[in-house]
Structure formats: structure tokens, C-alpha cells
Amino acid sequence: MFLLILDDREFTRGEVSSLVGRRRFGDIIFKRRTLVEYFRAALPEWARPHLVHLRNDEDMAVLRQTLESSGESTAVCIIAARAGFALPERLTQLVERIPYAEEDFTDRLYKPLLVFLRNAHFLVDQWTAFEASPLHLWDRAWQGSQRVQSVEPLDLDRIRDFLSFTSGSTATRHFNEVQIDSYYYTKSSSDKRKMLAEYSFYGLVPESMRPWLIQPFDYQDEGDRASYKMLRYYLADAALQWVHGAFDAETFEPFVERLLFFLAERPRQKCSRDRSLEIAQDLFVNKLEARIRQFLTSEEGLRINQLATSATPALDINRQLARYLRLYQRYRKGFATDSLVVGHGDPCFSNLLYDQQRYLLKLIDPKGAVSEAELWTHPLYDLCKVSHSVMGDYDFINNGLYDVGFSDANDLVLRLRHSGHSSLKPLFLQKVRKMGFEPRIMRLGEASLFLSMLPLHIDYPNKVIAFMLKAHQILDEVEGEHSL
Image (cartoon, rainbow, N blue to C red; front, top):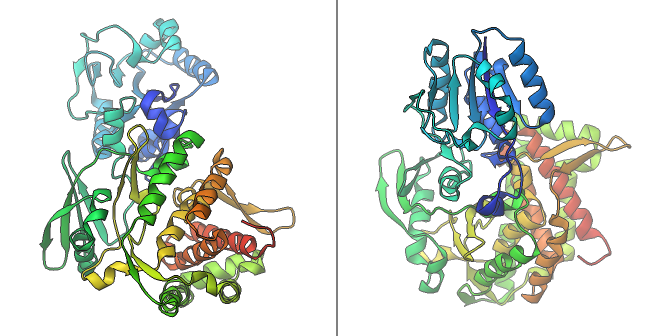
């Protein structure tokens, strides 16, 4: 018999909790999954039924009963939930070899994050100590155990290890590839023009914007792909902090102030109001209509739309588009400006690296440009991108922290798994008004972003329905008589 114990009794603390809130390590979201799910997925299929997820006293009682009723030949491997496996395939290989292990082993002499015991009854004999604290908190040295070197888990309780594990954690699109080492972040793609645009952006933007960006270098045209490098910054992105509830009013205000300062201070280029409306039409209407056509000309898009509409007719994408266009015409003058700005193109929270303690903000993954003319865009576009993270809960949906269910009237409803954010959203709106922007106009533009994303996420049907529900909710708010 063999048991694999994931000891998840600890809660985050110190600098790590400032990034993800106070929670069990297993509940931290990483690449759209909790660390527990990430760990389970790395296990060989045969080992998954043997996994014991240890979280509380009830789990401890069940584990003790299991151990006491097991034979002397029962082996056990205890792994701390704070152990981060940057190369999960090495964990897979280690677990595959465990049935053949003849000696006890650990990953380190003191405070090991991984301990294998040939005789599981060791835990029963040491139950009082094990009940008091996980093995990696014991003071004893594990001289009698071999050292395993095939895996070197990071200690996620240490801020340096945590940032090393999570930096660059945002999932990439299917045509992108990212390689990360201790010093560099290398991005490559079959979309060569996009790579060139992202690489060229830093050199094209006015000097005043560059301190907010990370400089790319070493652009390579590799035939069917292109790539460039950037220095690796050990900073958590704002999406990680936002979905884990790590911001409160005291920490969120300086973050928003810096982000909106960046938007307000971008270089400007005078233009006529008619010209600004033409650009707004292209960004917020023409682009949306093209994406909706793309969505509805795919078999999967038609199927998803039919599924959502059968439960809630108002979600029908054609109806939502018609409703959006009516509202856009009603508020069209609100998109008129007398200048254009240099646009980042995608300042959603996953593209913002932020250090709360040092107020350090860096923007990554711009839409890019290959010429100076391509830099200029409508001032509202980047703000709408920020809003769809703050007001629209995009990062919760993108990370799977939602449920699509039914109301008492059998309409589809979107339920998000967050707390405390309702007090931060008014603070954001207050700052937006101080910048001179009308929140209703911003949120209308935000609705177009949610609807435009439908064909881009079509491989996640449930997420698409969540976006449809969110767009419908925003349009309700825009159409409402109360002020936003």
C-alpha cells in the first residue's frame, strides 16, 4: 500500500500573503488552476487515487485511522503544499519511481518539503509532533534518509521562491511560446509581425514612457517564427494579486493612482473631434462587428450562442450587438476627444507587474507598433482595458473563478468567487472621474471588449458564456438611469 500526502494545513504569511491574501497554499491560483489541481495533474494516473489532501483536524483523524489499519509494508510520501514544482514533469518521474524505493529519502537535510518513509507507521509513532506541525517545520535533522536530487522544490513561503515560481505565470495563446530562465524571458510566435511590433514598440515610444516598460532586445527572425528577449523581473502581476484579494483600500489606491497617472501622462497628438470619432468607431464598433461575424461563422460559436439563448434569450449575440450599437449611438459624442495618445493596447491586470511595498509598476506585452503612426490611438481604449479588469472582473473569469448557474426564474446567471472588491471599485470610478472621463462611456467601451473576446476564447465554451453574461450585465448598467 502507498499513500501520497499533500500537507496543506499552513496558511500564507508575510510578503507572500501581501500578494495572494491569507489562504492555504493549495488554494493559490496558478495558470488558471489552484496549486492543488496543478499538483494533482502532475501525478501519474495510477497515483491519484492514493492522494490524501490534508487540510484540517478532520482530515488528520481520517489519516490516522488509515495509517493505524495499514500493514507494516505501507509506504508514505509527505509533500508540503508550499512546495513549488517549477518542472512538474520531474515530480511525475519521481512518483513513478516511488514503488521501487527501498530507502527513506528527503529533498534536503533540514526542514524538507518532501519526505518518503518506507514504513508509514513512523507517522503514527510521531503523531503528537506531526499533529502539532508539518514535517518541514520540525527542528530535527533527517540524517538517516537519502537525498533525492531529481526534484528541487521551491519553498513558496519564501518571497523569492514564490516570485520565481509565479512570475510569467500568465497563460499564453496557442501561437505563442514563452521560455523563462533565471535571467531572461524569451517570447516567440509564428505571428512574426506581432513579435516585431512588440519588439519595436519600446524604441518607437517617446522617452517619457520608457521607464514604465520593460526593454526588449535580441530580436530574431527564425524563418517560420520570430522571437525577442526581456530581462526577467521577479514581480507578481496585478491579476494574481487582484483575484487573491491581496488589495485593500490602502494598497489599491496607490496602485490605481500610478496606473492612471501613466495613462494621463502619455504623449498626446492633437486631432479633430471628427477624427477621434472615426478612430473610436473603428475600435469600438467595426472591430466588434468583425469579431461577432467571426464568432457566428464558426460551428462552435453558433452552438454556444444557441445554448446560451435557449436558457436566456436576451443573451443572443445578435440581440446584444444590436443593443450595444443603439447605446453606442446614444452616447457616441462621449467618445469625442481633441487628441490621440500613445497606446499600450492591452493594459489588463495580467500585463501589469506591480510591487505593493515599493510602488513599482511595469507594463508588459503591448499590442506594439512597427511605425510611429501605429503608436497613436484613442485615449479611452486603454482605460476600458483597465476597467474590464477592475469593474468587469475579467481576471476572475479568465482564471476560472466563476460559476455559470441558473436563477430561480431559470435564467443563466454569473457568480464570481471574490470578496472585498465591491469596496475598491467605487475608488477606481472616483479616480476615473477626476481624470475627466465619464464612467458610463468607459463601461460601454468595456462591454465591447467582452463581446469582442468571444471568438478568441472559443476553446473554453463556459468562459464564452461567462463573457456573454458579463457584457449583458454591463449593458444593463449603462442603460440604467442611475449614475455609474
